[in-house]
Image (tube, rainbow, N blue to C red; front, side, top):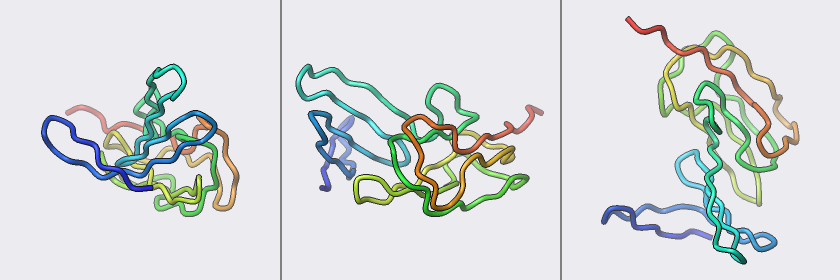
Length: 126
């Protein structure tokens, strides 16, 4: 379902789905979850997950497109791969600028939550 979330007075459209007591909200390459029983929030980044030089699977799903190959330059916010989960398509984006160092998944592969999908070598500071 599509939801609208207001942050600092600005409305943002996002995709959301309730699965077994957990609300999953996906927006702009990131996934946020909330346990509806306890109200506990967490943030699972599709492009980072604690380390912005990696793109991690924000949820279990299937890789449907790989947009960049190892050696390709990538800008922060650029789409790197697409996966399908919960009957929806999610575009995962890089958090940092750099070079694609490794792609550790393949089109058609089922991936687990948190699996490293792409590693990025950051652009060296000048």
